[in-house]
Image (cartoon, rainbow, N blue to C red; front, side):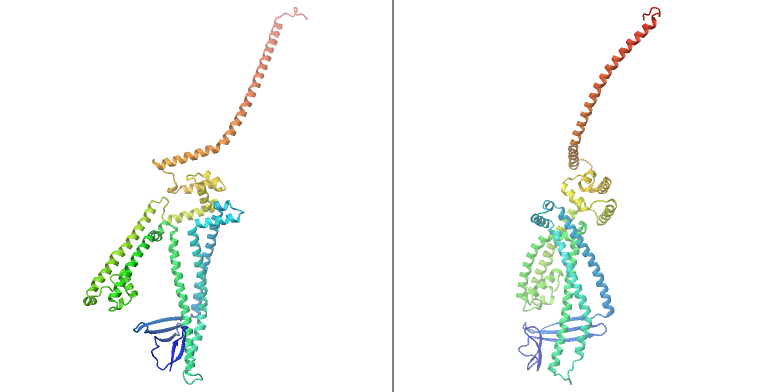
Length: 508
């Protein structure tokens, strides 16, 4: 005279009844508990018979509550420790990414002009967030994933640690029940049994919830890994193709849902009373999706077609719509987007394969450490601000602040070795544009040298005036030397005359 029924709070309770099945019965649930001593697994098996739909339908569920032994718990702890170590490495990378965002914000023109002004800094931050909206969203997604993984690992560890003692408690509670000959009545023993089943069900549901949450995290991490392939054009084919095809697929999905719904209404109305597969709208939609993904599925039923020829027309029409038209439309949209992506890659001037790009990044990092190059972000930001498509080593040294001309030259020579950064040869517009840019650079260099040229002209003029003064002094000296020379000639003549006159005739 006792029956276990669910209360309005969905808890199992013992209620009085005259019959096991009566007019109030809408569902019969048979539950059994199985325990594996070898593996420490508690299994809750439930078989459910439901009569709410006008007919009896059966279903079952199997849920497990696993308790690990000491050795397995230690192995699981070691594996989780490895996962925690990887998470710490990712956390370090997240901190580094945050510092790069901070450095990029400090190098932005809005921040440079707003130092010391909080309101202006806030506006500069808003502008920076609009400019880097995509990378910031991905960064926030990465941080959220790490936090959720940390919480998941903590919950899993606590559940595994408590599973052993909890399983032992529940099993001993079941074994200690005295169904006959005990001090408790059968109603009390049955109540304890139902309570223990509820505890096992709660633990199994909690474990299943953790597993479902872990599966969702794995799917999110898979999506994040696929998004991470956008780091290189050659590995971003999937994401780039889907992003290009997203709009067309969205519009196509609207038309496909309209067609699917209409065919489901027709099928459920016409064949719902005769076929269990088309008994409801949901069943009709599932059959059509099966025809879409795995044609011809159960649409072609020779026995059914023999009894009702109209089923041949309906199934052929559905198969034609899904397998011939809709499926080929999806393929056409994806292939067209893929062709666009490949065309963009083929016309890209800076495209290289993944291995060469990885080798170039590693080589540049080694040279940066050895030769003291500035940070790559600093160089890129300075070149973007300069708005000059053609640069020289001297210009780089003055623009970025290399510690020596040798470092600037090695930096310039390294990146000049790439084909897409080398000077273009041959005629045509490319060469003319390059020549015009070089002439512009020469003009700017001449303008930079103009003050120095004026200073040199002044110095040359001063030297010229000095040379003129020296020339005048030389002329004066020349005249003086001429006068001296004339005096010397007079003295010479007198001496010669004195030598020719006899001494007697010389007047004293």
